[in-house]
Image (tube, one colour):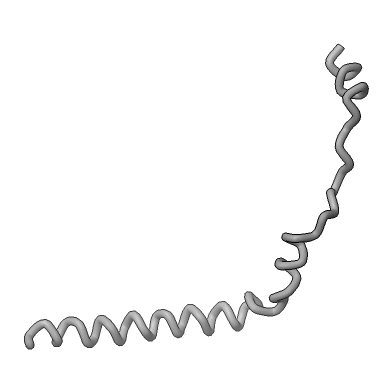
Length: 61
């Protein structure tokens, strides 16, 4: 029973810490664009097209 004197305040502190971290991330816009990252991950658009092998060979010389 003496261990509850340590565990109950520790559990409350961890819970409040988690709640504070969630509210902080909510305030700072972490959850503003939930779909954007998902669509960027599955999009097939490349930033730059791959180079042709003939261009690579001439660049090495």
